Length: 104
Image (cartoon, rainbow, N blue to C red):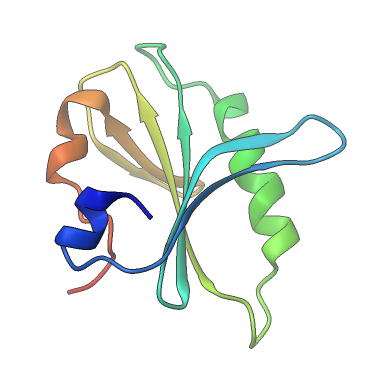
């Protein structure tokens, strides 16, 4: 856990995901029983294949009763914040205004 997360009262850990097929998620943010999977891209436009790692991780985590709540976030170099069926699309310029804890 980072010092800034600790001082902010945010519990949980930070990690990443990579499977044997090379699919990956850049950052996993754990907060209690919830996970936020974050993929980062420098592109200024969003392409469907940018969600591949997030989708692979979501499939692995599952959706059963015991599965954690999972939010998917794609951070990119564009300027438009968008809610898509495959996850939240968030511009780099607004990552400081995103509710990373998922609370409230």
